[in-house]
Image (cartoon, rainbow, N blue to C red; front, side):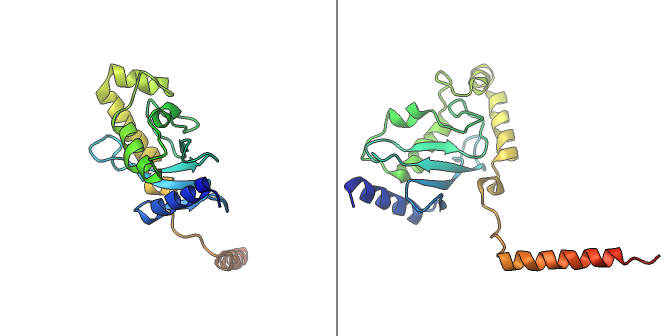
Length: 183
C-alpha cells in the first residue's frame, strides 16, 4: 500500500471515529458522504447538510473536492451543483491538514465568514452586500426548506426486501377486500 492510500485510510478512519456520520459511496475510500451541521451562532445553525467528499489520487498533497448535496444559500457555494469554491480550500490546503479539519475548520469558517467578492452564487453575494439582514433571513429559509436531518439522508433505516414483500402482500389483500364491496 502506498503512502497516500495509507494516509487516506487513516484520515477516513479518524473522521469516522469522530462525531461525523460517514457513508461510503462505493467500495473504494475515495468517495463518501458526510453529515455536516451548520455552526452555532450563524444563520446556518440548525441546518444539516449531506456533503460529498472526493479524495484525489494525490491526497493529502492535493485537497479534497467538497460539495453540498442538499441546497444551501451561500455566496461561495454554487446553488445548483453544490460545489464549494475550490479556492477556499485550495488556498490554505497543506498535507498537514486532514478530513477532520475540513469539517471542523474549513466548512464552519466558510459558513461563518462568506466571501461575497469571489462568488459562485452571485445573487447570494449581492444580497449579502446589499442587505445582511435579508441575506440571513434567506439563509434561514433555505435551512428550513432544504437542510433538515431528513434532507441530509438521516432517514429511518430502510426496510428489508422481506418486509417490503409482506407490505405488498398486505396491500394486494386490501385491494382484494376493497373489490368485494357490498352491491
